[in-house]
Image (tube, rainbow, N blue to C red; front, side, top):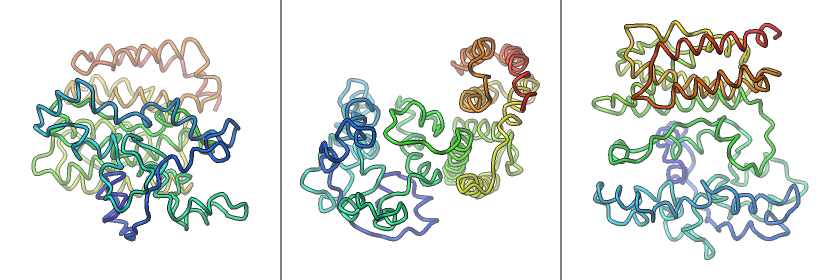
Length: 369
C-alpha cells in the first residue's frame, strides 16, 4: 500500500506518478516535541509548540468527531461511531487508518493531523534530518516529504481540504474549498514562506481544478454541484491559460482534458517554469462584471464564479503594492465578500455593480505596475 493514499486520499496522484511502495514507521509527534528539538521557544525550535497550542484545525480535528454534529452525521450515514469510522478518521485522525505495524509505540490516534501526516513517516529520517552537513535534498532522499515544493505541498493537502465523498456531503458535512494560498496565510506558521503569494495561489488552484476534473471524470453521472464548482474555478483561472472546455455543459472529454492540463500547469508554476502577471490577473478579474450579467449562465454557476473570484482577489491583492492598505479597496472587497457569502441569496446584478466599484477603486494601483 502506498502511504500517500492514506495521508492524502489522492488516488489519482499516487497511481499516475507510480510512487514506490515503502513501509517506514510513524513515530508520533512526541518524537519531535522535546525542547531541544521542535518543542522549544526559539525561532527555529517552536514548530511543535505552534502546532499543539495554536493550530486547532490540525492538532484537534479528532475531537470534532465526538461532537453532536458528527454524531448526527454518523447516524445519517449509518456508520456507528464517527471517531471509529475510517470514512471520518482518514482525514480527522489519519493514524487510525495506518496499519498497526506501521505505528510506533508513542503514536496517539488523537494527535489528529500531526507532524508526520504532512512531513511523512519519520523512522528513516528523524535521526539524520538534524545533521548540519545534510542538504534539503538529502532529507528528501531519506524519506521526508518535500513540502518546499508547492506541487508536493498542494498534493499533500488537497484531499482532506477538498475531496469529500458525495454521500458524506449530502449527509450534512460542510462544503470544502481548497485554497492553498488562503490556508497558508491563516494557518499558524511554523515555517518560513519563500514563495510569492500569487505562485502559491495558482499552484493550489490548478491542483484543485485537476482533482475536481478527476472526480467528475470518474462519475457515471457528474455531480451537478461539483460540476458548477469546477466551472467556476476554471473560469477564474481564465485569467491565465486554461484548456478549451464547454463550461456551461461539459462532457467527459472536458474533464479528462482539464485533469491533464491543470496538472501540467501546477508543475510548471511550482517549478518556476511559468509565472503570473499578478496585476494583469487582478485587472482581468476586477474588470469581469459583464460576465455576471450573462443571461445564458445560471445564477448558481455565476454564484460559484463569484465565490472563487473574491477568494482570488483576496490572495492576489497583497501582491499589488499599497492596494490592500487602501481603505476604498478594502471596503469594496468586503462588499464583494458579503455579496458572495450566500449562494442561495446571490444577486448577479448587484455583484456586477459592486465589482465595477471595486474595479474603479483598484484601477490606479494597477496602472502603476
